[in-house]
Amino acid sequence: MNAVLRPFRLLALAACATATAQQPVPVPVTVRTAMPQPLAVNDTAVAPGRTEAVESARIFTRATGIVRERRCDIGDRVEAGAVLALIDAPELDQAVRAAEAQVEQARVRAVNTRAEADRAASLVDTQAMSREEADRRTADAAAAAAALLVAEAEAARLRELQGFATVKAPFRGVVAARNFDRGDRVRGDAAGTDGWLYELVRLDELRFVLPAAPELALRLADAPLPTVRFREFPGRTFPATAVRTSRVFDPATGTMRVELRLANADLLLPAGLSGEAVFTLPALPGGFLVPNNALLLRAGQPTLVVVRDGKVALLPVATGRTRGQQVEVAHAELTATTVVVVNPNAMLRPGDVVQVAPPSTPGPGPR
Image (tube, rainbow, N blue to C red; front, side, top):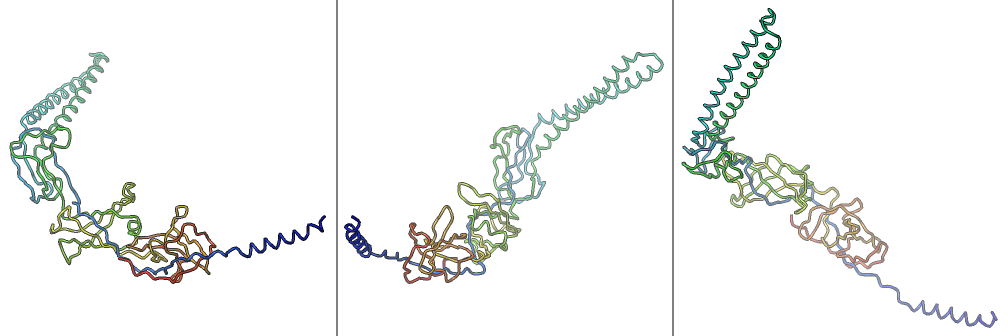
């Protein structure tokens, strides 16, 4: 039986071998490539921002009355402690006089009760007064002394309120806004924020505030102090004296608040002026520029598809700033001769054989 079937088995094997030999060999995928460009030693970043006053306050009064005198107006420069306005508060003045009279009454009572307590203590020694009566008089003296402290505290509180009838500048600055006229009635106990009198800003130093993307914010620690320029002052730059960062990224915008300090002793720059901060940043260590469309996301990690000996390899990279059509990347194995696939197919896997089209070197990206 086996001898009969052997010729048929041989014929079947020959037919399978012929069919296998006739199957086409897969053609390698053709990919476009580019060469990474090494980063310069230093990089320039420009970020838009706006000036703000280094200090700003809305000035209220806690005295209720009628404005008798307004000594300052919008644009005036004032020194710390300068009188800005005077308020007539006759009810408060009378309350202060009444409180001072109550202090005198409490002081007289405290002196009298203390004298009676001392006299009672001496009479106890001669048994002319009972111990209970002496203790009662001592307690009255202590209560009178406490009442004097209460009266003095109330008088001091009213005198403090009376002092608010003279509105003073808390710091040196410029009057940016006013919210009253002479003769207006102001309420010192008004709720809300509508009862302010002046808005005072300090402009001899300015903040320059900008929202910084992660690729800028995380590299400021190693960068020198930047300069700021404004379109309204062509050809001039203003050096920053300090850099502060909030250390928190806003989840809504993905940016971090960065504040620069600008000296402005001559008050040349106003608050609210838009400009640009120019940073000189150290290059990303071991960094290169590659086209934006060369990056893939694999498991949340930016990845380059590279070609080695005609086969695909994946290279996870750290990314930096985006510069127009290019992006900064870094990896220990990335060199200027690495063949990087541009616009790679997401179906490519490590070890796939590919055919490389002639590489093109991208021009330098915008700086």
